Length: 80
Image 1 (spheres, one colour):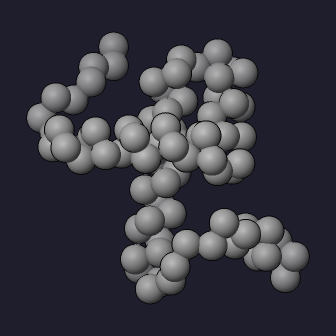
Image 2 (image 1 turned 90 degrees about the horizontal axis):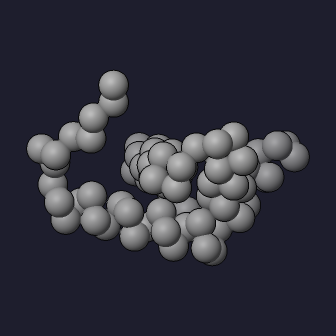
């Protein structure tokens, strides 16, 4: 059984939720990930958590590399 963790920073959780909501509305990559998960039968909350995980991974990579967000990064990297 999977249980939601409640011992977390409520403000951070709320910010991540709204970040993911905006991302699936405006970012094609996030929307594609969300739609693919929904098509596989995952619920809205589960799909949104996966989008949040991806966004946090991107944010951590940007902080580690000292770079700014580039929505075309993946396509540029694939072309090189």
